[in-house]
Image (cartoon, rainbow, N blue to C red):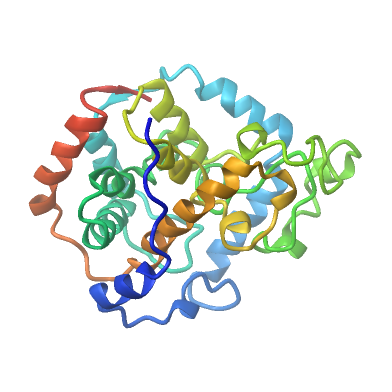
Length: 285
């Protein structure tokens, strides 16, 4: 499938002006203070303790049959009305609104890339796992590779991994761990969560989106890579080529968060049209 043009690096300024943002960028992702900090830290402590190689492989086996549920994309979006992300220090409202906020931010900045608008709507749908009984530490939050030592930009890196058994295993506790240099992120076992699950759902159901869309979904929570600059020793040239797209998506995922909630009923027909084009019908989850 033809690759899209690399995004304009100046778009962030256009985005900020178009959205009329009042909140300073430095006030997002504040992991040192704030009313939600205790909840956020607890989620990451559990995540960084229990996300191991064996745990992640078990989740791939558990959910890799895609026999948990059958529903449409918009039915999945509606389920997120019930979910507030316990790892997010910026918002305390249901995730369904964030999906439309992200999609609409992308739509304003990239009006001719309808597939990109749909990515905004889809990106967090893997969080339906939390509504199926999975603990939030196995669904939400920043992702990181298991099977190697966590790098410095992982959130709460110095205070949350002490009880992770993999870091006491010499196979998994070095910088490369069980990987070869520049093996490619597609060959890396990422911590289990909504990114990887939704990517696998898209593959299984044969979404007709471009490769950039699959990359954005799979790695949008991999902040230590796309924002922290870490884990370059695992990256292939393809990963580096895709990085600007993941970073472009991240601007909308992060900076469209605000308490002004969108008129979802007005927006649904437009996004139903995109769903019919790229991922129609009832899907296997």
